[in-house]
Length: 479
Image (cartoon, rainbow, N blue to C red; front, side, top):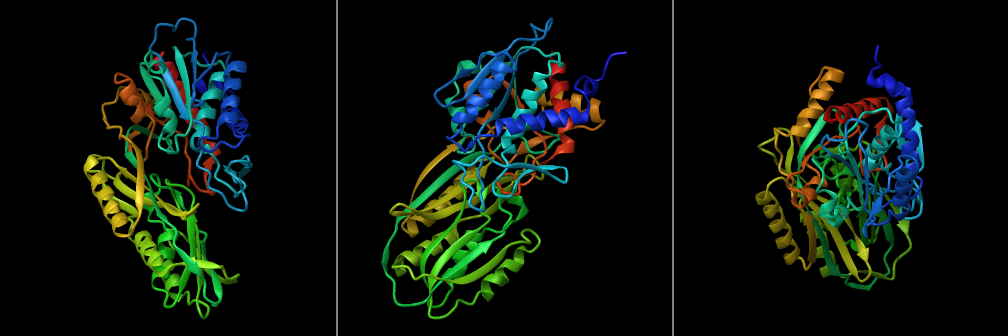
């Protein structure tokens, strides 16, 4: 009697151990966007030494490795398995994303960090599943290309540098950057990355007591995957409170981590004759008790700064931060339940001589992106901010996607359930690849990941075998 696919791979515990060990290997160096060089070498070494491949590296540190088909499967379609090597570096407790590797722990069946940083399961866990699976040599696959990219989290920058001939011989591309097992993604939103700046304008501080007001404990999260959850934005909450603080003068306001991460914290330095009354701020927090139960406000005395914001700069900056759109703007009419357009105020604070504000717009339709962009542009103009913009196109969804249909057949045979086939409100690299290889049929799947882009990012270990079996079954179905 022939062995089942699960038996060939050694059982569920062997799969969990293999993927976890591979993920730890790929996570041993810091790998923020544009800082993946050491991690790129770890991937390249694995491709050479474990898989026997000859990886190619381009100027952006993207990697391509073509692997031969299993004997007798040489004439089958070529599948490109693709993921990104960088991670969004949410940080707490003194963690330095550029210098400190993630400390990975297992707690109550979840793979996660030690709480000082995000985990990097987005997209390292999908990559680890692919590499470990192929290392077993127990799957009969056709011709493969493994493509690992850099700087995905900053506007799909690495994917933009991928040469068209790296994709030209592919028939299918399976991206492993999904967050929800049981879903096949066939389309994604476009993204508009906005960076707004205004020169800091300060004056000497008066002889008033100084206070540090802090909002901490928000859940934050992924600005696409979590935006519909209605979580608090501490930057906007604090800006709104300061705008109404009678007699208060602001010496500083900062918060957030990245364009595409919902902020979990913010802090301000203010000067007032007496201790600020936080009652209005705490009342505002009550609206978020269900979404952000750990969000708290505090006020402590601080050393008086030499400089504070001028009254004009304070008025315009607080109005700008309060007026920027944050949250769901519209739902996608073609895919019920999927967000169609949104905006995230992700980061604010001083950068050199300027005050900088970072926002991220996502939209399935150009019309709604244009409406949000025009709103932000008008607000910036009214308050003295100028901006730079980068972005990437959407990936139009099609339910009749041949690769998604293969994934669905495999999933049904393994679980008795169909895959959810749809689009997502995040940016995925196929949106860039479609212009480079118009005939390439693309879909995306991924292991379960919860609270990506936050220090709470985690993945359930007991679901990893199901994802690996989906990958393995798809490889054999295409071969």
